[in-house]
Image (cartoon, rainbow, N blue to C red):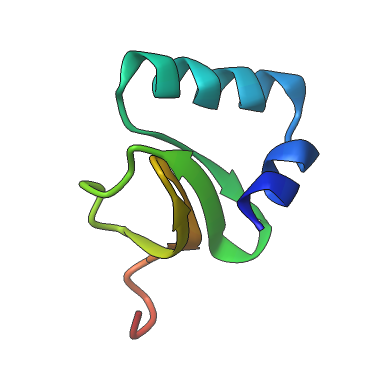
Length: 68
């Protein structure tokens, strides 16, 4: 799933995540329907990881309005 989503990102979004991956800092891209894809995001408390592969993760953005 992560690879499929990465392939659908714009070139700029993909570059943004690759830069974060290479320099080892957290970064994520907001996706439709309250989802995200990101790298090094484990410390970000408002992200609920549903799938991960190495430093990459995909999941839900907790908005505080639901019982996440």
